[in-house]
Length: 399
Image 1 (cartoon, rainbow, N blue to C red):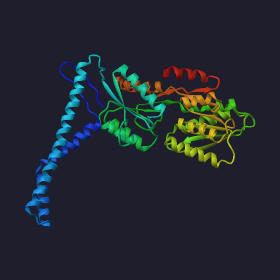
Image 2: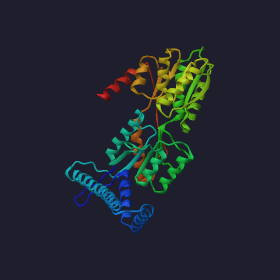
Image 3: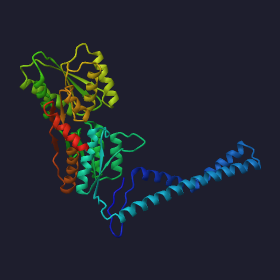
Image 4: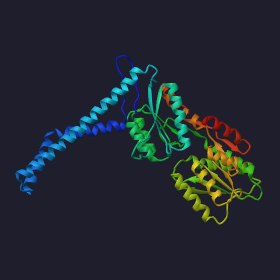
């Protein structure tokens, strides 16, 4: 990815990491091919072939032709890549020189998400890019369009090597993430964590949902729907993450049920679900239902994948209405399920605003050297009583 600051005398162009790596490899091959070491290697191969095969003139000619063709192909590849790269640079420079309304980017931020293809991830990206355009900041979604799948830590290391101005990272509360954030700090690249925090790191700020308040909201929804006959509340955690926010949410639920719902005799049970992908979440939750001796009265889902999977499972097993489902996020499918009373309620989070806040936090730190350590977003309950409003807003956005 590149960005530029066009002026009359100069156009500064930054070429993508993959392109730079490709050119570096080709340059190395070309340099090696012309080196004395390569000459000695070819001679050695030549001598060994003479020793192993009693060359005649006919065989010698065939090998010579093969070597000549190989050398031409290699030179052709190098030349072709150089010509192509120059054409690409000329096109980019030409576009910058001919477009008087071209956006000028003063900063380059890398956005690294766990599941960028999910709706929450796309909305964070959309919000950050929109805010970036207002402030002359280019936000790049790292890992997009790559043939190889990289971990978030590896993508952060690539961003550090590319000398971006700032990193927005969906982190985990582990030593691995602490180390990569420390590497960024050594290069004077500020890191803002989003959705999931790494509190014991050198990150500058965290933008996400307040876990304890979110737990209290879930607790109040449980109390709202519960009757004296209800007993069992099952909370589904994401087994694929080390995010401490999940535990904070659980504490918020427990405290609310104790302080505000002590007239109800509810028992909390916590299970971890493999939510690395939509398929693994669906499989884990289906197996959970098969193994259950008794259905819980409530199932609390703390992410979008688990919400979708529980919703689908109760439909497939024909147990709609037998379990109160409290979900997370407001995708179209989840909102439709709330409207049909399949899901009792869900939590709405403004992820676009979350992405915008990340850019604001990095800009503030780079401009002043200081930034608030936390920007906490509110989670709002969506139930049958107000879901029409959210469906209407979603429809207007799509139009």
